[in-house]
Image 1 (tube, rainbow, N blue to C red):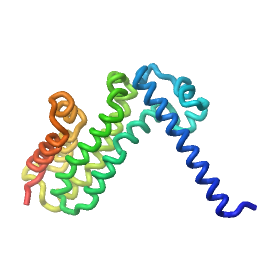
Image 2: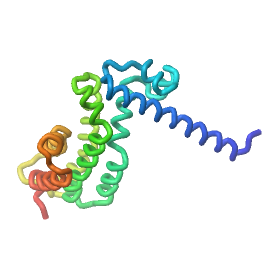
Image 3: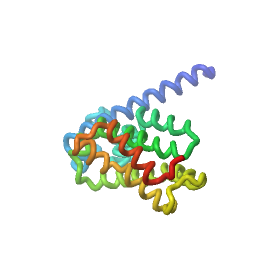
Amino acid sequence: MASPGKRNYRSEARSEAAERTRQRILDAGKSLFSRKGIDATTVAQIAERAGVSEPTVYATVKSKAGLLDALIRDAIFGPRFQQAQSRLDGVDDPVRRIALTAHVARAIYEAESKELSVLMKSSAFSPELRKTQQSFETLRRTMQQERIEALFAAGRARAGLDPDRAAALLWMYTSRELYQKLVRESGWTPDAYQAWLEQTLLETLTQGS
């Protein structure tokens, strides 16, 4: 009978092997999506490049759409996001939490730009990419909802706003499209974008101190 220590060791070894396999599949998918485009890439090609079988790809990421979802999730919710989110989670004041949303938005789009810009350019018109991005937009809006609710509960929302309008404005101002137009197309620095966004959110959504 195997001892608990041996069982734990084997479990950890299996987990590490599974993570290495997952990373090879993600790396293969990212490379092929960036070079060939999402729609032109097949699961068979991903499996071949990763050095695994097609069933292993399906078992690991479920589908090509699942692989794309994992790539985007790993990019935008990586270390930059975690650091920004930890600052947000440590603040109780609802107005300050609205301000820190600018830091979270910057973290998401900087990471996405660094990790996935080539992939997104090569698949700009891919229905699969648009569908995945839409699901993340829904998630992003859901994540912001608590901040809006806290702002209104504290009586700190700007006069004339209702919660639905405020949520829509927060979602719009922190959109990927606005970041791209200001930073990537207009040459703003990320610092300038964050400072502008913070000021804009405070002026638009809050009544201040």
